[in-house]
Image (cartoon, rainbow, N blue to C red):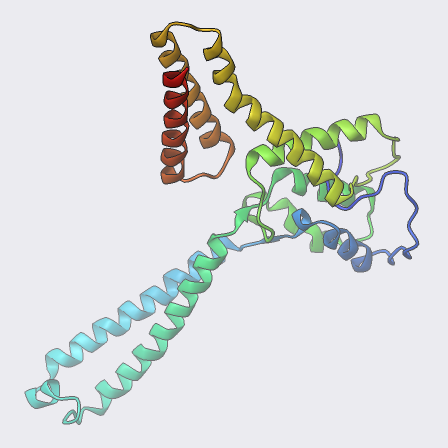
Length: 269
C-alpha cells in the first residue's frame, strides 16, 4: 500500500528548494505540502465540559432572577423598567446579559468546529508513518495524531468515490514507480493527478448511465425494458447515496430525472 497521500509530489524530478531544518521546519513543510495533512484536535470533551458549565451558569442566574422577582414587594418595580429601583436585579440582569453573550458566542464557535469532517484515516496513518521514519519531533508534540477519534480535517474532504479512486490510483502509481527507502511520503502533481481521477470518474459515470440504454436496445419487450429502467434507477441512486455526499432531496431529484429520461427513451424507441 502507498505510504503517502497524493498531493503535489514529483516522481523522478529534482527540486531546487533547500530542505528545511529537522524539527518543526521540516514537519511544517510536510503539513503544508497537501491539504489533507491539515489535521488538528477538536478537543471534544473540553468543549462539552465548557458547554455544560456555561449552560449551568445561565441556569443559576435564571433561578436567582426568579427568586428576586418572587421576593419583590413593590410590584411597580416589576411593571416598569424605568421605575425599577432594585439595584440587585439590575446588576443581575447585567450579569445575565454578559453570560448570555458569552454562551451564544461559544455555541457559534462550537457549531463551526462540529461542522468539520473527521480526519481521514489514510492521512493520519501517513503522518504517523512519516514521524516514525523521521524522528525529529518531540513525542509529546506529535501525540495529537494518536487521538484519532478527536482529529478533524481543516480541508474539505472529497466525496468517498473520488477519495477511493485517489487512493487506488496512488497505490498503483507507487507500485509501478521507483521504490523508496524508509518511510517516504509519495506526493504527486496535483493538477495532473486530479485530472486523471476526474477522467476515471467521468468514465464510470458514463458507463453507469449508458448501460441501461445499451441493454434496452437488445430487449424488444416493453415490460422487460421497464424492469431494466427500474433496476438501473435503483442501482444508480444507491451508488449516489453510498459514494457521494448527496442529500435526500438531491437523490430524489436525480432519481426522478434519470427515470424520466429513461422512460421517454424506451417509449420513443
